[in-house]
Image (tube, rainbow over all chains, first blue to last red; front, top):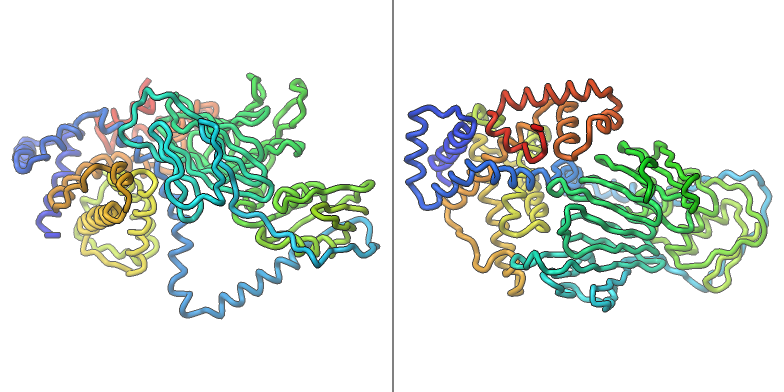
Length: 400
Length: 190
C-alpha cells in the first residue's frame, strides 16, 4: 500500500475526529470538503460518522469484544511454536510429571487406616464420557448430535443451526429474516457421560456438563435474554446493547451483562453453586425480592436447594475457580470434597450407579484426575485411598 | 485524542511482548467489528487473532504506526475475503452478502477510516486509570447502580461517585461533549 495514501487516511481520521469534537479550523474544513468530493462513498462515510446514533451503535458493537480474554487465549499459542522444535525433551519431561501427578497428587485423608482389599474387575473397561448430546428443535424433532455430520443441521424461522468440525453447535441468524417471526425454543441435553459446547445466537458460549440440559430461544428479541438450566454449565456471556442475560435454575436466577461464570445446579447436590470468574453477576432466589447477592470474581454463591423458601439464604465464599471449571478443561479436580460428592461426579461422567451399603467414613479428597481416564484408573486411585467397594455391571457398591 | 497521531515516526516491533499487548488492546475490538461486517460475529475473533499471531511469529516490524494500522485493515480484509471465497455452500454466502465485497485499496482505506474514528472514542474510555475505567464500565456499560458498584469493588459510595466524576472529566478532556454523546446510550448523562 502506498505510503502517501496511508498518510492521507490518517489525516482524514484526524480531521473527522476534530470535526466531531468541534475543533476543526477553517483551512482544515476546506481540506475535508475537498476529500468528501474526491471519491464516491466519501460523503456517505462522512455523514455516517457525524451521526451520533451511528457512532453509538458502533461503540456498542466494539464494547462487545473482550480483548483481554482473547489475549489470554492467544498467549498459549504465542509461546509454543519455537519450543516444539527445540525442546521436545521438555515436553516429554512435562508429560512424565503430569502422568506421575495423576497418581501422586491424589492425597487422601481418612480417619481409619486399616482396610481390606477392594475388587476392581479388570475384565470390563468402562470408558469415560465424551462429546455427546441431543438437540430438540421447536417442532419437537430430536437430533442426536454425536451421529450428526458436520455442517448445517436444521433451519428454523430465519435461524440456521450448524455443527462445526470440532463438534460444537453454532446458531446463525439469516440476515433477511423478519423480526416479526415468532420466537422458537431449542433444548440441548447431555446424557450421563456427555458434555457439549454451544454458541447461542447472541454469541454467548456455553459448555454443558454431563446430565444437564439448557433451554433457550433461537433468537433473543425481548429486552432481556433468558435461558434455563438443569445441571451444570459454564457460561461466557457476550455483552449485547446493555441487555441482561439471565440463567434460571429450579430456584435461582443469575443476572449478568457480559461475564464468565459457572452454575452447578444438579438436583442431587445440596446447593446451587454459582461461581464467578470475570466481571460481575447478581444471584437471586427465584421469586424473592430480597434474597440476592452480587459476586466478585473468585467468589462462589451457595443457595440451598431445599424447597423451604423461608429458610433460604445465599452464602458467599472465596473459592479456587480453577477447581470449579476443571470439568470444562478435561479434569476432575477436588479440594476437600467428600466421598459422596466425588462419587456423584464419577457417576455422571462414567454413567454408573453408585450404591452405599451402610455408613460411609469421613473422607476428604484432594487432587486431580483426567476425565479421559478409564473408570478402572479412577477406581485404582480410590482403592489406594482405602475406599472399599465392588463392581457389579454398571454399579459401584461402596461397603466401608 | 487517544491515538497515535503523535507517534507516527516511531517504528513498531510486533515481536516485542509489551508493544504487542498494547497494540492488541488497542486494535483487537475495532478490527473485530471490521471483520464482523464481512464474515459475521462468529468468525471475526478467530480471523483477528490469527492476524496478530502471524505478526508475532514473524516478529514483524513496521516503519510507523500508520503503516501498521493500514496493514492490519488490509490483511484482515484479505483474510475475510478468503474465507468468503472458500465458503463452499451457497447459503453461507447468503449470510454474509450476496456478492463478494469491493476489493479495491480505496474502499479498504475508507472502511478503515470508518472504524478508526469510532475506535478513538473506544480507546479513550479504555485508557482511563484502572479504577476509573472499572467504575465507568460497571456503571455506564454494565448498568450497575452506585451502591452495587461500591459493594463489588469494596469502595464507599462517595468514592464511586468521585471516580465517576474524575472519569468523565478525563474523557471530556480527550473528547468533546459531542463525542461524549456517543456515551449517552450507556446513560452517562441523566
